[in-house]
Image (cartoon, rainbow, N blue to C red; front, side, top):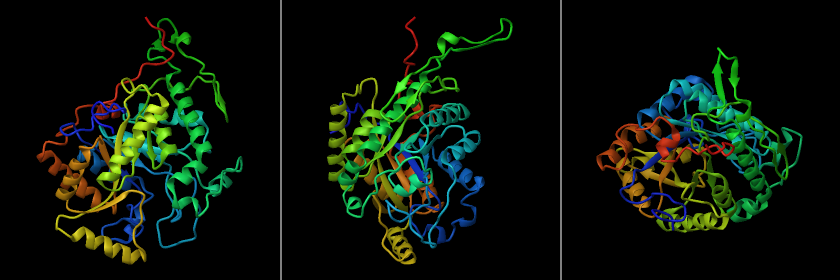
Length: 415
């Protein structure tokens, strides 16, 4: 089990500061959210829409926001595209969106999702490093494998396993089928981390009088060789404010738990119930021990995902969910636990779950902006009244919010 003194080196125990993030996606995580009163379906692909959402999240003092991304149109099915026209389809590039939002915000972390199966590691590394520069140290990165064979067809360079209907019914089975893609993902993250370190912190001299802009001895080739690709380096982007932006992953089974233990600074898990949380935390701990991670110097923060619908009136959120399900024509399904209730009831749940070893939670608003503002203006004040959440931002970087140390560059010579 994780928690203070556990294998992950986290501080997820009663009395520790609670971390909160929100996952922003389209009109919300319910497929009928775009048809809800107050939704803005005509603005989903506009910059102003996203700027308003992130500004609200920052007003709520949240640690970070995540942005979903994909290499194909959204689909009801996990493993294949569909032809539905009654749900939101279409999105914008997550890294470019985060870069646009960086100068419009001041403290909140910005964590875009990017695909690591069909995107060049060098390109990924410089994109996230640039975001860290643009945000002055508030960038994070959520690497995601591409498990849909149809996505590979958009690039035409390789094929990936076709996941079957049987696979998607068992998280362990599908993770096993995708093991090679996760292994490749580990290499991508490692290459990116080396590229982020390829410039030492003081490699830039910028001395016009002497004509020296950089110290070439402090810019390094990384010479990374993986099973599927190699990267010579160095990066074109100097080392960023955080040194290495935090890497965030989503994990449902043993293979992605192993990915998190090897490659991530923060992992989002999807337990259902208190007992389920305890069981998954034990699996994450086992993955950490199996990989030999040095948790003293590289703590792994663990967040649980919850899909939330919140209303002040008791029972109103459940009724709203039932109405949305009726509009969608089917009951809402989710990998994450679905919570309906009041902000106070959600505060009770979060504080109870924290005691088993969680560091924080990533909340997926069922509808936007309704459930986001319920988090920022209902849940956050309730947690503050209980002394469980910050009253102000105390740090200027995402690593600072999360209590993660800034790593030293691996190529920097002692002294």
